[in-house]
Image 1 (cartoon, chains in turn red, yellow):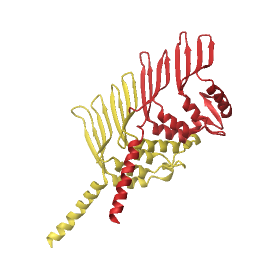
Image 2 (cartoon, rainbow over the protein chains, first blue to last red; image 1 turned 90 degrees about the horizontal axis):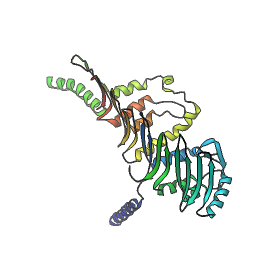
Image 3 (cartoon, rainbow over the protein chains, first blue to last red; image 1 turned 135 degrees about the horizontal axis):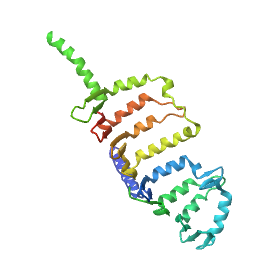
Image 4 (cartoon, rainbow over the protein chains, first blue to last red; image 1 turned 180 degrees about the vertical axis):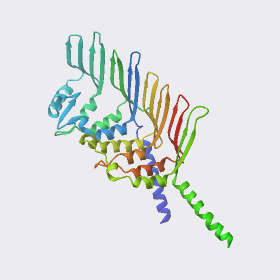
Amino acid sequence: MARARIWAGMVALGMTAGLAGAQPPTGWLHVRVEESGAKAAKVSVNLPLSVVEVALKAAPETLESKGRIKLGSDKHEMSLDDARRIWAELRKAGDVDFVTVDQGDEHVSVARKGDLVLVHVNKAGQKAEEVVVEVPVDLVDAMLSGTGEQINLQAMLTQLQKRRGDIVRVKGDDANVRIWIDEQN
Amino acid sequence: MMMKIAAAVMAVPVAAVATIGATGVVVVDVREGGPQGHHIVVPMPLLAARAAAAFVPEDKARLHLDSEAARHLPLAREVVEALAQAADCELVRVEQDGEQVVIRKQGQMLAVHVRNKDEEVRVNVPLEMVLQVLPGPDGRLSPSAAVAALGSARFTDLVEVKSADGDRVKITVW
């Protein structure tokens, strides 16, 4: 009886170790801000995705509130129902330029290229700026996969854990910003 | 008979020293710069600090948080707990105009290092202490719990401040 318990314990231990070994490496979210100029600041933030996950789970209202997705500021919102409907149509279209806007010195394009939705803002002139945002298609799918007035945060975080590479790059005349995920802490 | 009395007399200070040693001591070490600078060392048993903290009046241990700040307290608590589980890393680095701020997670500590041309400050905060210092939903702090959390930072330089003119303040938990 005692021997059977010891064997059961060893098997359980082996299975636990096997599961632990099979876990994917932890992802890290990195933010770099490099200002230009005489008193330029360099800011570097590195956070384990587990911490980002906790923060987003605990405060989902940073992304959505009462069924409306926040797009940059409180003045720019879209209902989740509209977002789901538009995304379903866009997704079917495959690789295509969704939106192209040329206004004065500013050029904005939103396009799908393979597994990514690329948002590209290019501003010429004195305060030239280039913003590149790369959002994986799977991440948008996951975010909008829920129903009702809530984004599917859990599915979104699962996709974010898989993501490696740049998410946002901003090249401005006064600062460069880069946000990316990798496995380096 | 004399031996018994001597043993009894010795037992009291030995027991006191052993208790203080076992429960921890905070040592504040202040050294002024220059050849005539003073050197002051103040040891404070954690047990005494904890007892003193227990007498902090209720109204002084209560923060008046606005609703927005209070709403984010559980989030702050969860983030600190998640951070405690994470691997050691450099969390934040800011460099500007000869000034540098670095925040690292080292074991169960947050190590903050601030350096500029005049001063250098090192602070090691136990994550357990951060959790204890965060007020509850009613805005109430627990000073004695915060002091007790110092017990998790034993044999650590909690704070070290060095100035360009040679002044130095060091707070160590033994």
